[in-house]
Image (cartoon, rainbow, N blue to C red):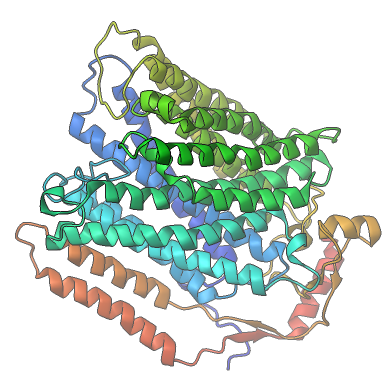
Length: 625
């Protein structure tokens, strides 16, 4: 057993790391790359719709962009960006030295990333998938969907495996790795929402995996699950997809709620109002999230009884969501609010998300939905939830946790300018789309005739997209500028915050806590500031700290799954250069071979000596951190 960590090159260190903090940063970088890619597609689609009968994109390219934009934003941008914060913050907030399974954590990232690359590879083989991000059958069947749909099916299948095992890891971490005194009802709201979101992933991604498997069998092996002429049922795909798809919205929104529940109390200088109610409201939202999937299917002819049941269940979700909204408002009420960039994003989230929720209740009424269903009103509603909810909270979390993650502040002046440009652009883009929908503009169309009253609102919507793009460019400039010129953060707690991640040194050592902290209350760091000396009391003496070794196996296993998926896709290619089964089976051999190696190889990790930990502690005390 090694007693000291072996020195490695920087690149090798990042490729083999199992440190949750480095994996979080890799999620952040990967999610940002996919976010920018999908954002460029959105910009191009809005340019195409800027004027009537534009020829900027062809109809086929527009279909591919609209499919890839939605798929990437939900599966490969929003999810990994939330996972970045979950990876970095959860172990720190619960007083743990790492996640429960560091190896599996790395494996989850690399499998997610390889699935995203597999999906993106479709552009080099005849074009992206073109059946919409929901991939409704028969558009996605072998008779209508091209090779891009095979990349969609296998890319999401591989990526989903990574998401699923990461969620299981978070669940085990939160249940088993909490510091002494950190009871479930003392967990920060971000940990609670991440816990419930991970539970949703467990139950929602499994039907998606089953549905993708059935669609793969239809497309590659001429099965007939969704082919009506062969005895299958096309509507079955819609049920399977939305049993996953509606909880997916809450998989993304609940951690976003958690971020808002951390930022608002920190910059209102108050504890979160109604903590217990917030926890139980989150549980109720998660439960009801599985009861409402068919409100996406009011137009398929399920009948008045089924429509009524799902309509009532959908409207019921507004109650626990309303509890959260009022609790955030009551937290700010009477608080000493600091309107920095993080707080601007967090506070603007509240009214914006309410507007998205109100239009959701409108769409929950089946007769009304029948009118709105295929119009831009639904596009506007959805983006008020996804962008107005999730993206605004991601930006709030980025500005809030950035000093802890990277050791320096983002520039506040550039940050506030970014907020106003992005926020105004967001409302310009999507608010008028409600009006376009009410005027009858159908969604998923790549052009429209002039003189129908649609021209001005489409022009305004596209201008808003340019504002949002300029805002994101400004954020990139801010990140680069701050890396060189930003205010260095050497103190543990630059925000005078309340939770445990701000009790760790900046930068955070690889072992997080030299001594596991003793938690004595909700908001443990704030409690120690009021009732103690401002530092966390240790729950253990300084001892040798056990740490896991890095491993290249997660990366190799993900490469194996990549080739397994690509080999299956090759079955539908004309004249492949090599037998597809060689590629597919070879990829599985690589993956299962790595699993075997991992099973039989003894890897006990290494220890950081107590003397080194004491020296680090002494250095911190001398530096005043």
